[in-house]
Length: 392
Image 1 (cartoon, rainbow, N blue to C red):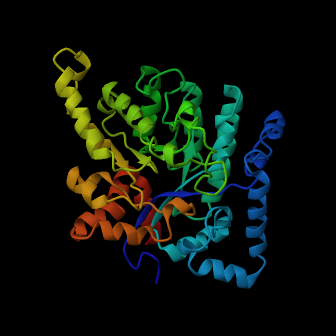
Image 2 (cartoon, rainbow, N blue to C red):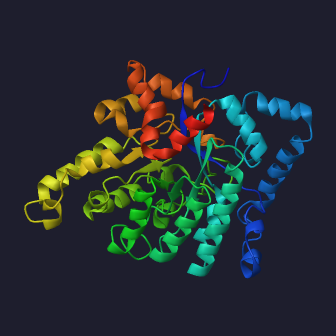
């Protein structure tokens, strides 16, 4: 018996909890020195390494390891989560969870890229992170590596995407902010979108790089800043949470308005861990904007579908477990939404399946299967097919 209790479930969001030296084996020369440690003291490095050491010690304690593996999703989260950074443990966790496929995103390893001083550092860090993530995911075909490539330089971004996909990555993530100094719809990125479409590789937007936080002036409220969700200082807080979906909306608006989804009709992607309650109104506003401006805007006149239809065809979204997925489906369309566990992050809660099931009460099995399985299959092209073939 597994956590999924016989239901076929694809998990659209899971993570590694990187160790201090996660990137180091994949770097050389000056980059090895710059990125030898993932966590600085200011970012709570000492606290984090203590948790990592505890998780490593657990592996040599049969009783502690058995207890942690007994019910991974209800157990410790973060670095202490079962299989957070140990790929052998993650395979065991997947056996218990029962997910058919799981997208695996990095967590704090992305910090090396966002802190880079120049493009050389940025792409060296991205390559090292992608190699580390792929090494982790190679432990089991159910784990799909999500590579990250900066889009600051169109040619280098495409080169890293090609390298990562050739190495086994099943999806490519990038910042949900502007693509360097350009819109993602700029013609310079057409080779990038063409490559993803031709190779049936989806793009991913995820909380993290490019995510908008509460502007600093709003933080100047005369009060001491609260701890984040993890009790430390390295993650988002309540006011940041309310801004999560701004950047994805801007990015997707550019992809629609600049004609990317029209030029590349088979392109697909996902907006992950940014909530989804905003999606129905976003679709309405896209179409409302078309009706308001199409008489004078030649780019709107050139569209062969309504703006919302491009999104429905190309993009899928992961709600948070405490959101009402049923209401979203009734307010928009059942093909838009995906199950995710966010394992082993605490945001995924100790029972995401149970929470989503409650919000889907009253829907028939076909709609539930779309949420748990087939919407992911649509987004992931051949990846789900390969997993199914491997299981036969």
